[in-house]
Length: 205
Image (cartoon, rainbow, N blue to C red):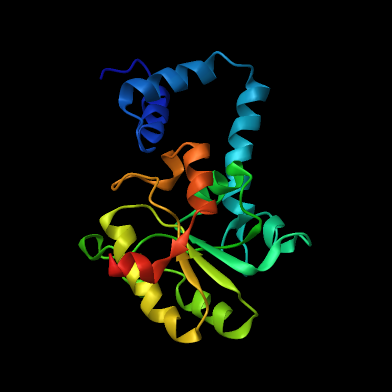
């Protein structure tokens, strides 16, 4: 792609580094910003800079937060003795949008994937085990995507948690194998949360 400006080329190259953004889309976004007032573009840029500099992760559940404790962990009306384990913040948002879950979360920060060099020590698994070991927990819901990596992580978590004698459940398979939680529609995901089943039952099958 030929550019009439080095500044334009640099901006397009940076945008095209974003997931799912090719050079044509990046060029369209950059030209869109060029047509905006300078103040609007500065607000856009400053929002990204502040995000990167000031964002925190909840010290309890590892969800993205503005404070040391996220709004969900800090909320008095949440069911503190139920923990829903998810891959990342996008899954927290997807489940919250269903309006069917009122417990707490634990964000792993990814899934076990030997092919990608991601092992248990690269995820927030030890802190989950610590939560279950040291706080009153009535149920742990494993709400991970129905993929090979998700199932591998489910089985590993089950082995780490089963000796605590806390009910371990998994969301019902209303989500097709290979599907990721963030792309499931709210009704299907909501029903999967409500009709969750003991994880050990799925092992027997």
